[in-house]
Image (tube, rainbow, N blue to C red; front, top):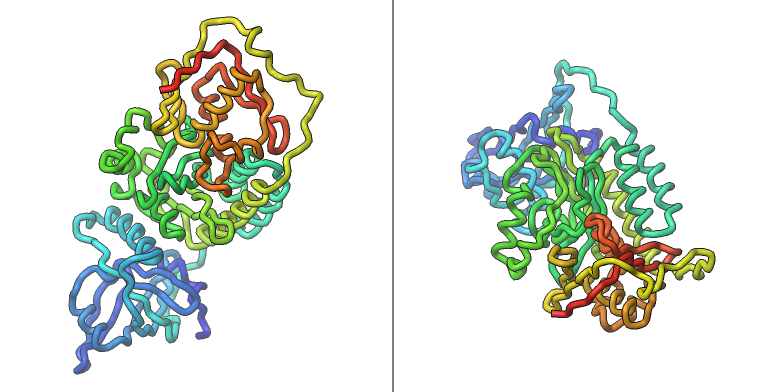
Length: 446
């Protein structure tokens, strides 16, 4: 092929519907509009299968089809010769196309009609540019490759996870023009993801949760594939979907302690990219925008590369040795020198949820960590701790030796800060931190 498939990916965004031509065994042609064309790789595309119509009947007996795509800016037309290979009804490709189709259906007022039955995978045999006039192409708003290079250089200089996450979100705005973003980490035993860092929102949303398989973020994590939507769709609206999912799940009892997910009230573009290290899923990088079609295939490529760098940096930081203790820093005052009304800290063993007086703070592994720190503070008057000793502490019951303990500590620290609690965590070095308690505390174990 003289024209490479990845050079015309802008034609696949669904701005202008594609036209597909098929033929019956006796040569009778049939032409129809197509809802979605998905770029798979340099030799394959996938077409949405929604109805068992004449097009579908023809393809099943005659696998050769012709497809006409139109560039949304230049209106240049391309004719593709395709050969049908297979239909996928589950998995990463199907889920990515299902999410994208939901946005297209909502945008065109066809939400109750469009339903993806399968993703038909085709081999691209030839691409031809159809003769005709075209409009000039618009210059790109930014150089994504240059932005990716600068961002990866800055991430490489980060010495701890908190700084790594902050730098990632800052660079997304500075070099990619993405103002609304968040990073969620995987809690594998709980079957959910929890927000550990966000940017561009009034509230941090630290500790808010998404079940695996729910919405753009949950599906991207479950299928380990990028999920991108270019139009607003109620099917993937988290303000409604998360609560409905929780009501039907094992953690319905936690609705009263639900932390609102940070996010736009009506995102018109969404992109969720898995963060992995080797074969291990660590979390999801999620970005959104109030604009239609804000994120393109090129944005997706850039963020997939960035997420790969982020995952490797997380892995390296998790296994880095702790710094030597900094003796120059003053420790917190011992418990006997504290004044004020005691703060009642209540712990529920069933799910390790923690309440400060009657206000919910955190649950799960982060709650277990906090309870362990508080017990050592009162019983042993300890304020200095290391990540390594916590990782080996049987009281915490970490789900896996490879679990990202530092992410749990960042979450706990942010929740304490969000609640303006008289207890906070100070980082004293890589792999080291200090628990500071500003009021007397009283522990209640339920």
